[in-house]
Image: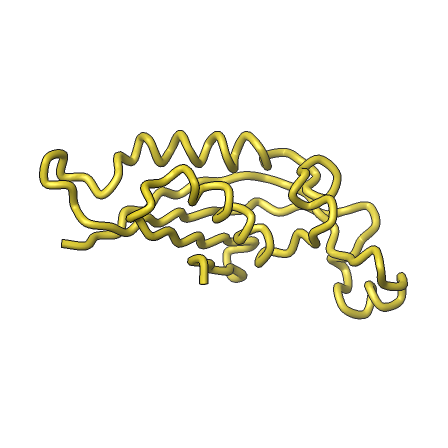
Length: 136
């Protein structure tokens, strides 16, 4: 049987959407108030979903405690109460859009999982705006 196990997490972070290679006018036109040079913050909600076969011995797809620890180390400790543009290496040259943040989170977590497990990241930037990435 194939089952999906999910874990919710939360972090607060600031960011600014802009491209260094664009003019101030173009950044303002494309990113609007999210281009504020003084940054702005979000209370991000994260759902990490792992899909795989149930282990006949343990009854788990994955031990949720292990997943919790991976999320804490790779996401919460790395991103919480940080300015993503300035303090998180992955975003030094990558625009920290919700889409890019989800891909970065996926790339940080996937190597920590058994290769046979599928991973899906759902990141809520606001309660109504969210993105989902599953490695495709």
